[in-house]
Length: 415
Ligand SMILES: Cc1cc2nc3c(=O)[nH]c(=O)nc-3n(C[C@H](O)[C@H](O)[C@H](O)COP(=O)(O)OP(=O)(O)OC[C@H]3O[C@@H](n4cnc5c(N)ncnc54)[C@H](O)[C@@H]3O)c2cc1C
Image (tube, rainbow, N blue to C red):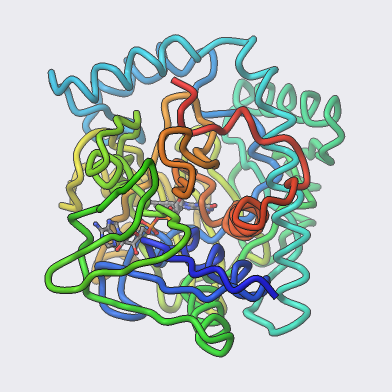
């Protein structure tokens, strides 16, 4: 068996799944993360959805005009912090150039394949050791006829690429989820979507990688990378240095500063989002759902119910903006009338930074300049969903095997 030493920087879902599949190949794995073991990162408090329904990249037609309108409203679900920071300006320009029909058409099969393969891997992992995966699909809930029309178009686009989706009226929506009272005109059901509690999934994967022999160094911030002869030889943080044959950078939103340590400018911005978890909600839906117009994700996690939303682009900053949190809270009673703002009074908002690429396609591949360095990041709203497939592809790259489908479109050096 190949006894390669692999060092993974990042203990989020991407780093953890990469560690798992590398260990399964028999590699010796060291994982380094800034937070304490089991500590918080973007992968812990997210909405926990596995989303074959998300085959349209964030950079899509209409996003620019919608985004500009949202920028005017402090409670809106989308905001770009105005700044002349050259990395944000470059990211914005690349986003603008990719917000086209052509780009959507070129990316949707890739995103479909990644999400469906990841779903398959989630089911496989769940069958080996349960982490509470719920395979009941997702509802795109619509308050307005216009919203339902747009979602019905999305369902049509889904059928074109073989993703199952069904348009439902209000009655059929209520029948599908009797757990919650809904005030909607209808919905689209994506039956292949799933949900889970991400912190439970992360805890299970952590246990599994430790059992497979991973060495985990927590509370270490990597701030130096040593290279020799066009290869990375070590990464260091504080007084600790980690040598390996292969390195994987899975630093989430911090992947860009990490790559700057080797002189590479990766266009990547943090997209801040919030979640609020009700420990004993007035009603408990059976399915996860998205309030289509309000852009809020709702996920049952055991007896708890999580609401997640907003995308504030720009800055590695986890501070909580109460207006945007209020935007999430305010939307709830309009779709779920048995809920009220009072239900959220003592709930602490959680904040996380999604790593967002400008074309809505993840970064996954080896760096041409440093061939023993693999980048795995930029999964934006789908990092949890794409965790297992990303880990699997990372392991393929480490082994020199062909991944399950071509991945050139995700090359980290594509811009
Ligand atoms: C509100 C909200 C809801 C979401 N809902 C969903 C959802 O339903 N489904 C879905 O698929 N996705 C969802 N996401 C997105 C998902 O959470 C992210 O895409 C995913 O968690 C990113 O994982 P990651 O491993 O790349 O990064 P992270 O989880 O952020 O992990 C990054 C890791 O890198 C480490 N690191 C960074 N820099 C250094 C350094 N210098 N030295 C050492 N370690 C370092 C960090 O310590 C951390 O361990 C949501 C996000 C938010 C904010």
